[in-house]
Structures are given as C-alpha cells and as structure tokens.
Length: 374
Image (cartoon, rainbow, N blue to C red):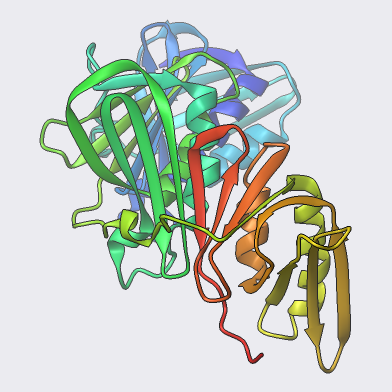
C-alpha cells in the first residue's frame, strides 16, 4: 500500500471512526483502525462489535493494500501533524506503516487486516432513506431520554418504526417519554419496527450533518443490524432484541390547563430554579394562574440554601393549577428543541405533563410529576 492524503482529511476521518474503537481490550485488533484502499479513496474502519464505522477519505492511491494500526497512536500522531500532505506506505513483510509529513517521519507496527472483523456494506437497495438534517433533529429530540441502566436493555434503545412514508422514534425511562415523527424519502411496506441502541444513534448524529442530503438506512434481512450510510461514512449497529413497552398508554388523552410560552424563557426560568433545586431533590414548582397578569411562576426552595422565583409571561387556557417536576427532566426536554414556542399541557398536580411544539403535532414529550408535601 502506498497512498497520500491531506492531514486535515485524515484527521477528520479518524475522528469519525474513533468512537467505534473498542476500549475494553477483549480482542487486541479491536483497538486498531483498519486502513484500506477502496475505489480510489482511503477507507478507515473501526468496531467494538456493538457498532462499526466506515469512513472514506479522499486520497491519491499509488499501490493498493490494507493494514490495521493502533487507533490511539495513529490518531494522536495525525492530529499533531501540520496541515498538508501525508504519505503512507506499508511494508507488507514486517507489517510496518511508514508515515511522512513535511519534516516528520514515523513507523508504526500493525496487525494483519485479514484478522479484522468484517463490517457489512450497505447494498444498492436500502430499506429507506431520509434527509440528514431531519434524522439528526429526531435523534437530538428523542435519544437522550433512553435509560442508561442496563437492567432493562430495551429501555436503553430507541423504538424506531418505519411505516409507509413516515418514521417514528420513541424513547422512555421510568420518568419521561419522548416521541417524534418525521417523513421518509422512500416508502416502507410492510412496516418495520426495531430498537436501536441510543448510544449508536448518538454516533449517527455525529456523522450526519444539517443538510438535506440523504442518509440511506438498511435493516438487515435477519433483523439483527441496522446500517446508516452517507456519501462519506457508514455506521453499522446491532439491534436490541425484546419487546418495547406500549408507550402510548402513558400519553395523557386530555388536559385541564394549557400553557403556551416561549421555550427560551421557560428554559431560562427552569435553569435558574435548578440551581436551588440541586439541594432539594431537584424539585421545581410550576404554578399556573390565568387570573394573574403574569400567569406562570417557576420556583424552587432549598431550606439550607435559599429560594428562587421567576415569573414567565404566557398564555393560559383552562384552570389554575400547580405541579412539581424534576428540574433536569424539564430542562433536558426544552434544551433538545429548537422551536421558539412550546405548550405545556397539565392535568393536575399528580398527572403527567406534556410538552408540545406550537404548530407541530409530530412531537411530544411526557414527564412524570413529583409528589411533594402540600
């Protein structure tokens, strides 16, 4: 193998595949990155057996070849080089990679590429495709809700349903639920329903960008893996087996009070209250009274620290009510959105609250209330 490429392109490629590198050390080769010539480009691959990432880097190919090299050493070295051309040459007999950039040279011992696990490539006909910006937004609004405790594996994933011209993502833990629907560019029939690890989707969000360029999505025929493919990179993830809870049962079907408010203002008030709530089990109170000039009051009290009150301008439909939430859950939900206005639907002090986006019925977030002494 003998190739040359730009330092900035190689560094970007290594940053994309880097999160796929195994850090557990079960198999030595999993801590390496596969460097391979492929169709006139340099292909980088890493896997930890839960996800696999491919990235293609523009390069000038003189001789074809493949080798795996230690990912951390390779990445640290490339990142420290100045911008400009890097020459990469492989000595097949000694499995040594020679790197040269300006006045710097290095040799790295590698492992045979044949030992590296095979990462499936996306076929010509994917299951569906959607706009990258839409997928990224969905992941940002939903995946953070997934549980991090592995005691119930299905809750560490995002239930993803491809049905006709629409995809729905839903994630839940015992205290909250987030659901988002979005359009597909390619119709899916019959319906496909899978649970994708939230950790995998966070990596997908790093690979896609805020453009309307498509991302191809393929669910393998045996239903064990899902592949996300862009022109620059692939991400392959395992699919979680199991039955996702019927999340629709926890979505309230009615409300007694509806508060329409600026997302930024409500987020700011919640964050200010959260500083005091840290010493009081993260409890933040929301008091709604349509008879008041400023009908929404967000407050927190910690006996040993002090208290905070913010009055937030809002439009209220329905009756006066009060409710308490975990400040982090409300801030997480509001912080994941880009909308300017949201509604908060309340059914009383002990009923779940529902956050919606004004003018967009394809999103909702349910957060369970906290029971506090009156």
